[in-house]
Amino acid sequence: GSNVTYRPGEKMVKFQSVDTVYAVEQGGVLRAIASEEVAEALYGEDWNQQIDDIEDGFFGNYSFGDAIESAEDYDVDGIYAGTASLDENF
Image 1 (cartoon, one colour):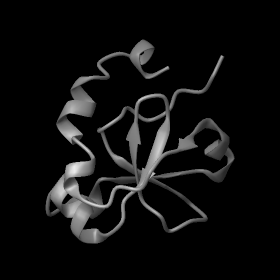
Image 2 (image 1 turned 135 degrees about the horizontal axis):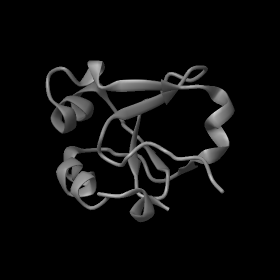
Image 3 (image 1 turned 60 degrees about the vertical axis):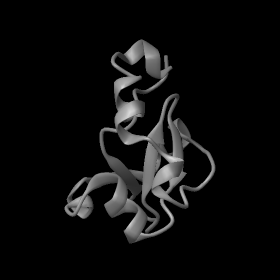
């Protein structure tokens, strides 16, 4: 089976060898967050403490979607609530 990816909306992630910060959507889709301002609008003032590093070896477990250019492009609470179980993330 597939490796488990981060729960959508839980945290932001980045790969150890890349500075880009991503939000996670269902199915292991990563969406680059365009700026610190957007990250703060989505995750609050302590946004930079809500980023987990992923080892580069797990890069293949994810796919990539459109960048998040504004807070309106990503509903953190809705995405989080919409993925209550592992089955909903595959």
